Structures are given as structure tokens and as C-alpha cells.
Length: 499
Image (cartoon, rainbow, N blue to C red; front, side):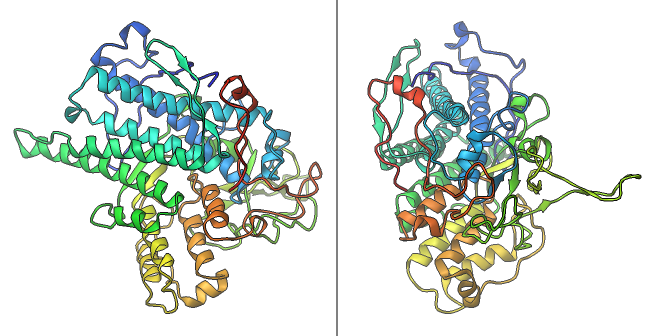
């Protein structure tokens, strides 16, 4: 990859990254001088840089064009899917929101692709440094964490882009080796290999100690690392259609519902901000969608689908607001908040309410949803006592604290499935609402086509678009590899754009 050598080893974003709040222990945040990369004491700083690069690729820090900030996979995946709509003027983002055709020369998509590849490289470089500088990884809790993060970058490359993403590598001396295009399955298999390496390393962590006070945090960290990699591997298996194998990894005994691995954000620097908060409430370039697709008029607030009714469902898992300011005399009309384009109503998301709000990456709730999908695959959904309903209702009756709703949700029944258009749509609606704005929805929409046989226009927004620049939605279900990658002699373009 042309920019793979631009590894950003930024230090010590003062974050906690698991449900156990494991803070970084770095004294002086700074850029790591190249001469120090062979010193074991630099490992915490390299780990911090890997997590920081991942956070930028995952959540972003805002919206490109707004103070020099950038999007993450949560925003662009939500925009191509049905979670978000474009509320500003950039043609590069309108192109994505309207399902293309997304051009390989789209500069915003290119910037975001480079950030994801940089995050992959940074995590793998960090893992390599752990292996080289501290061969006894049983004493290093950072190794299974960073190699798990590497696995997630391969998942995002597989779920978000076309088949045929090249993965290049840079060695410790800075020598670039161009990679060949990898199919979606090859990317997922690579992710699984990373998760397997993390699981083996985490299971072998030394939890001995002179006292219970020393052993307890070591045991908690080992469990957190194992659960983090386990959820990642189960997600990759689900993407490959290995439903039973995925569910077998994540019973409550292995991954309790209370588990969460979060990426935290901060007010310290723009780079560390929660990008979804900035892009919606501050810069007003993204807004919460509602039944996106088949808009009846220009700038209509809602369509008729097939996008989900995120706002109109009144589901507490989808918190949002439309700010209406009372008139100040001599004005007589209230001021309704509009997006950056001055015309689209700015429906703000409220899951992330500040620049420092954390975002979940892997959770026990996702583990329950994976179990429910395996139960759906078994076909027993005819009665209210069917396993899928039991699993989903257990989650609804005790919403995890790391998500928005604090009160219980009503039980689902076979009538719920009928109202949703069938048990499959019900399960994916539950996934959409629980995992809203956490970079799951685009992959799920593609799976509905690839694994369940739905037509693309019956799950992705389709029909008339709501902005005059594009009269109707296109047919894209993923992103092309940006034109910059054509500097790679092993790469021409996507193998295919299939879901």
C-alpha cells in the first residue's frame, strides 16, 4: 500500500480499553523516536499508538472538512447503510449516502481507507515489537490486545470494502512489500488467525502473584483479553456463515452479557474526540435516518424504507433529538435545527453525547445476538417459547449498562416477527438497534443478501433519493478500493463488488 509506511506511533492516549478500565501507563506522551523502537520500555507507548490509530479508523474524530478531522468506519458504514443520512453538501459523502456509484477517486473514502490500513499496520507492528522485544508474552497483556485489534481491522476491510483488498506490509527497517488482493473470505480467515493468536497468548498469560490482591487484576485482565478475542472470532465466523461455530464460542459461561471492550475518547486533542458526536451535534454533517429510501419529496424528513424506522420506532436504544429554538422577538417563528446544507433537518444522535464518550467494540450483548442467530438458523421460531425469542428477551429484560436504555424492553413474540416481516428481519432489527452506530449494520445488510437471499434493494435504501444532486439511489453495497492503491503493481481493482 502506498501509504503503509506512514506509521503513526502516537503515544499514550489516556484511554481505558476494556470493561476492566486498564489505563495506559505512559509517563511522557510523545512521538516515538525511531532509535527507541528496539527498547522494551517503549512497548506501552507503541501499544498506545496502535490503539489510537485504531480509534481514529473506527470512530473517526469528526467529518472531513470540519477542522481537518476525519471519518471512521462507524460513520461511512452507517451512511452507506440505513443508520445515517447526509445533512451537508460534500458530493463525496452524498455519493456514499446515495449508494453511488462510489468512485474510486472519492477523496474522503480514500483518506478513510488509508486510516484503516494504517490502523492495521500499527496494530501488527505493535504485535511484532512485543514478539521481538519481549518473547515471553506470558508476561505481556498488551500483546493479545493489539493482535486482536489487528484482527478487527481485517474484519472491517472484509465487511466494508469490495472483495480484493490488497494488504501490504512494511518490515522493521521500513521496507515495503506490496500485497496481493485478498478475497473477502481470505480477509476473514486472516482475522480469525489473528484472533487465534490472541486467544493462545491470553490463555498463557502468567497470573501468578504473591497475594490475592496481585492475582485478581491479572486474572481479570486475562479474562478480558480472552473475551475480546472470542467475540471478534465469533463475528468473523458469522460473516463466513459458520453460525453454529460462532455461537459455540460465546455462551454466557465464556462471554457474559456484562462484558464490554470499549474504545474511549477524550477532549485532549481533536484526534482523540468521538467523531460521531462531532459529525452530528457539532459539525451537522450526518443525521439520524428514518425509513431511509423512497423519499416522496426533496429534503423529506423520512422515507418509506426499506431502511429501518430508527427515529419513528421510539425505541429507547435509538436516542435522538431535533432541536427547535423558540423565536426571539421580533421573529415569530421557531428556528428548527438544520444541517450544514441549510435544508436537511438535523436529527442528532444521542448515544454519544460528548467528545469524550466511549464506544463499544465488542460486547456480551453481541455474543447473545450471535447465539440468537444460530438459533434462528435452526428454524425453531414458531412459538413464543422458541430459543431465539428466549435469548432475545433475556437481553431485553436486562439491558446492559454500556448501552443506552436503562429500563427493560417488552418481550418479543411471534407477533413481533410477523410485524417485522418475519423472524429473520426481526433478528436483524434487534441487531441493528442494539448495535446501532458501532460499525455492524453495513456488514449485516450485506449478510442479508449473501446469506439469506434478500434482494439488495429490499434491505438497502433504494428508490428516490432526497437530494436533488442524485435523483435515485444507486446499487453499491460496499466501497471500492481507492485509486491510490493502483500504485501497487499487484493490484488493478476490486475482484468483484458482490455483497
